[in-house]
Length: 138
Image 1 (tube, rainbow, N blue to C red):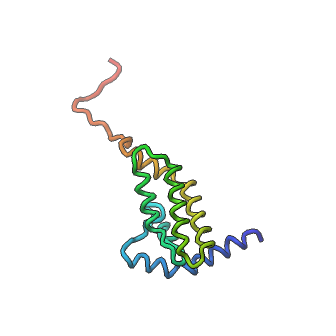
Image 2: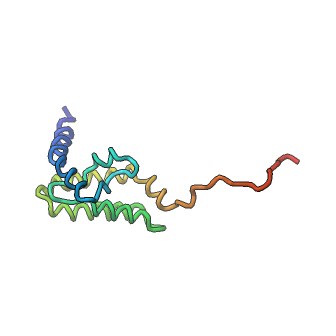
Image 3: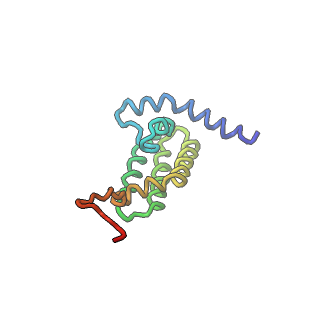
């Protein structure tokens, strides 16, 4: 009984954005919103909502993570603010803000690893190569 509202909201969202997703991809932007390296999840992640286009916000958020030394929280808050600004152009701003808050929550919950990967790419240590055999215990 308590899951009726979220299921109804999800069904409504899928119904309203299904055609919009195909149109977004046809414009050549692809799917910048969603986890990189997971095409199915990127396809399921909203790229916009009833007239609001989130793709630029997602792209900016990814670039923000790449700035050396920047705070993850700052990037995520800027992302949320930018999504809300874009919701002003939606036909249903309240629903758009609900979707954007959900996207912000997902970024806060699951964005730690992408942030660290973009901040510290040099810490992916290579395998050491020795030109001579290394012996220990002598």
